[in-house]
Length: 326
Image (tube, rainbow, N blue to C red; front, side):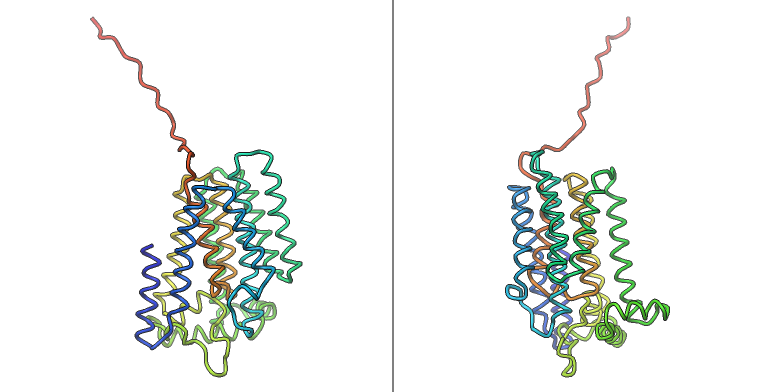
């Protein structure tokens, strides 16, 4: 809550310094906080039914895009495709968490089957990114069942997210080798890479305060955003805003590491949130309220403590009483 409060406060400070519009950032912070609180409460009461219901809602939103989610028409496909991919990754993660949490052995194969069905759903919806993200989350969840230590898995997920953000920054800054940069540009699109480059140039002009929330767009650029959450915060709110975003993601991984939930549930939620971080670094997924609320819900479900679940504390047997000698 402290980190989310700092994110909201810094957006207001940066907006006051440059006459910006912090409403989008404030809405994202509110949606994340509300989703996390709702996830903690529903996860404590219904640790299996709540993630299943959330996965169903995410699938409905992904299928009916762009109707239920706010977003201007010019954001497609840069924004809408990222939101669909993020919703599919979160839905897969929620179903896998439910499968690992259920105490009924007969329900587990059904939940695994539903989670596996989400992966080809991405291809049917025309979202190859969602198909790839769902498949990665599913594979990580299956592998989590044989991983005894969650710390190593969460550290690996943090490295994956860091590499994705570093690659985006390197491509936008022109640091990557020419051949590698050309290949990535062909796959991602020169228009989006050009927006990333403009975000880096704006960040260099105002490295601390940024240019102000909502001030990235120009009359010649109706999109109004660089379609990359780290670069958008770096350009609009400076290095402080980007560091706060990284701190929130790090706090989520730390909360997953400290929770009493089983390790497969923890690593599954971490994999889904890491997939969301990768998608948000190359797209505009976090600009949609349903995605930020869904991320908070999944984090809340994975860190909730279900009622009646006793902590497994090793029992210490008392030492035998010794009779005095003599």
